Length: 224
Length: 133
Image 1: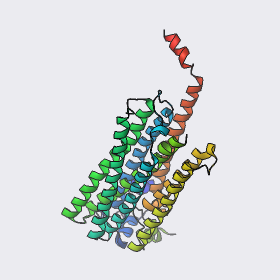
Image 2: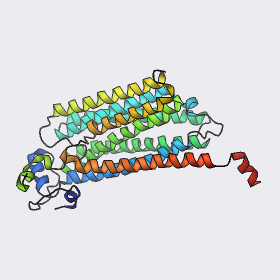
Image 3: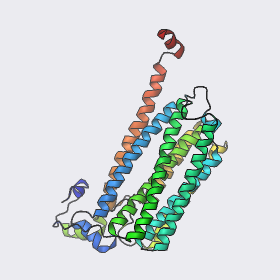
């Protein structure tokens, strides 16, 4: 029995089989996973899920720092002076729709449909890039008004938290292009599909973090 | 259920986070699931932005209302986009998530608790400045 199944408290008495190499879907895989060690697809998905949770914990530290420092404006502008909710609405719409198209791309990958996969991935890229463009424009505007990260503790925490999310989105966009190129060059191989699964998880998680972000930073900043 | 039955029962297989159940999901059903998720998430987002604009919610309770809406939306994302379910094939994923949530809560609640009390117990700033002279 693998440690993976032992951790789930599952009783598997069937003989341990060989690794299937992560064949995608189908009755064969389900049977295999129940009998022997879990497939590579499940193990890498699970491992990446744990990484994402650790990433969320890192973000929660930035959130805690932001909420502690939000009042320390050192006589400078506060969130209510700086934030433009129109921009935030657009950003939120872009990211939510990109999360949806990212889900559609995973269906395209499963059904091996090039039009679905590449079309949905391209839509995800465009929406993600639009999000990033709005965010960079917002940051540039704030720095131009003298409200850069060096102005106050509040702004340092703001740029750290929101900028960290922006860096994640940037990395996600690069990863997205890599996945499109790899599927084009190597086809729907099991190892490529595992990477596509991990990319999907990553992108959806970025949207979850953005939900916390627009609530805690922007909406509460404007309300107070 | 005997061991042999369990080994042949697909619902006892593990599922990777983000994956559909191993059996029975047609692409059309998957699109439907993502559409439902998009609809719920969009609704919750619109409500969040709407109540922040208006005075529909009693103002002192607005932050609480916003946090509740955000947590609901995170749940929608987890279920419909990340496919984290309560099924027996998802025990590992849910356990990892529960541990993550515990650490996040400890970090945020603990930080806020300590820092507000520290603020309360600190000498006013002008007195500190005088002591340093």
